[in-house]
Amino acid sequence: MPAPPLPVALATRRRLQGGGAVEGSRRCELCGAAARLRCGRCRLTYYCGVDHQKADWVSIHERICQLLIPIRTSLPCLLSEKERKHGVEQLVKRQKYIIELAYGAAQEFVLDGKHKEAMPAALHALRFSTEVYGSNSVQLVPAYLLLAEASTGVGRLPEASKYLSQAQWIVLRTPDCSVAVQYKLHRSLGLFSAAEGNFEQALYHLANDIYLASSTFGLKSIETSGGYFHMANVFFHQNKMDVANSLYAEVTDIWHAFLMKSLQAQEQILESQPETSPFTEDKEVGEDRMTEARQAEALRVLNAVLDIREQAPKQRPGETARVLHALAMLYYLITDLSKAREVGLKAFDLVKQLPRQESLEAIGHLLNLIRSKPSHAK
Image 1 (cartoon, rainbow, N blue to C red):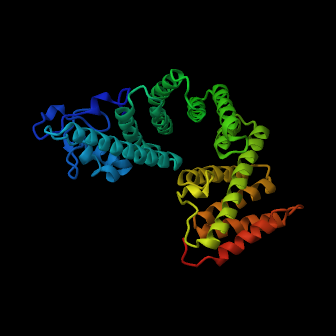
Image 2: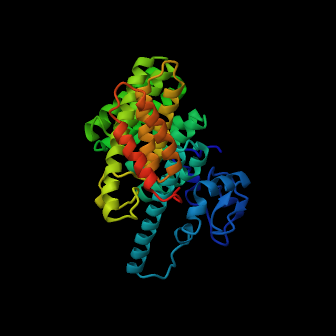
Image 3: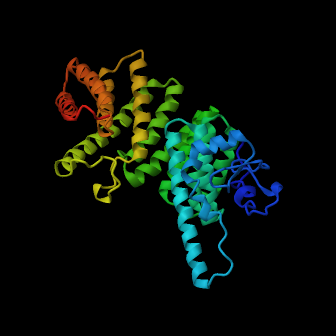
């Protein structure tokens, strides 16, 4: 699926969609080419062929199909100024909702390693962000970075470079750009450089990522741990195992502490609200709650570290046990109890063989929590 020309396929921003539109004016939702197919449900979205129609449906269109109807239907001409203003306000609210849905879907695909599936959703997030905020707004940067990461993931480095250049240009011309946006830009640049094989440049950007994230969120924060993880991967590919192992241990410690805190908070919540989910969006749970995005990141990162630990020529049983314990807590929190039990027992057996068995009690407590859950849980 070719990426649309920057910025964000302006050719597709507004195709003629009324009943009397000329056929040649209709453009593919994904690539901007002349369209010959139309969605049979919303009847307002066009595609150049079946492949792009299917790709868009799987990525995001199934979720936003009906939401597009009020957005892409023109307001009646004979409206009062007040009615028209209200209509515009409702339009912007709907567009922002689609931005949120599309960005979330694309982010989930990327975190799951499904980069191709992420592309259409990320394009929608970028397109609607452009319509709402304008083509030069810093609000577009997250979508550009997602598109760059997805493009890198499928090996389309030229497209990724264009998206990153656009994001970098916006950040450079926005003096008050937030640190959160800046560290994410450096992370994306680091991942792109690593994909190109330019490891020194990758380490430079990832060092900036860690510096910016830690200055705002702290050295031991989940936000900072991502920079450590990607930097560890670079050192791993350079066969600099001492540095890589040290960074992987840091990543494990950060997630272990975060999950331990989440587990304790969940136990307290369940005492008063037995049906509460650890992934609730209730603001009272706090900023450190386990969101679905963090769940996906934790699964990806911790399983990657576990694979490295288990396949290493020189075994580090203490580090392996720690990442197993972290994964067991994670699986418990997402109610995958069979997996939590399997991983927890492996951690317990491994810790019993160590000279120092400091975490044995904590793992044992976790296993008891797992056993106490109903057998029909996931």
